Length: 353
Image (spheres, rainbow, N blue to C red):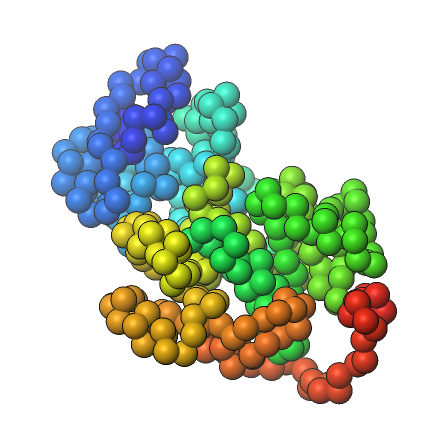
């Protein structure tokens, strides 16, 4: 028997595979909280449990513990349905550490069917494969890096500025950090067109004002092996059609840029009402000092996760390191050169690399 736990539209491909394999299929309805499903899950005795993990708003520890508890209790094998997740996401790494080896990470139904068939055939069982030293080093670079996801409650809310400010802050602290554009705004390509910069069109890399920026998402697996300490992902606006909620939620640190103006408040309220975005931090970019107290009251139990950014007319100049020190307190790893270099009228035509 196969037991599928999740929404029908996300696991519709499972039925045809189960029929081909002669497996009975039972389902448990989706829920944002895995603990509400446990009693129903344990009422079955399946050989395989397929968990669609994108349904959950619980912490990754709660999800992983519940999956392990259910499969151990019933001596079942867990198959993790996680389209859009990468192999090194926090949840996948945690599940791997608990001994779970079956995953469906593809986004299209054809590939999902193939991966499910391989799981049912035991293809992904741990095998004694000798890993080269070079592969081990590449793996270590991916695992040891930190990933920060930043998105906005609406457009033109300062998301890109905040993403770049985080890069500059981490550079200020002595870390190697880069910016990744994972939206359709084409900011990086436009910048390269009008400003003097180093541009690798194949890799989709632009180096400007000593910031490495990447805009080709298809090269992400390669980029994550480049040895940066921090990868800052700019997801644009969370309501855009191209926004990848799954990718955003699996980042090590998740940040929403919020607005307090009259036309921004409906979008802000929409984020605060969304259960998926409770375990995040919030930055208000354009709030005046008199408004900040009212905003803190508005945020209620999330007030301690709410921060206010200083005005940043130039996103490539760190405006206020103290703000980012509160959000991401890290130790400096090198001594800093505090001397400022003179710049031309258009700022970055000199000394940009």
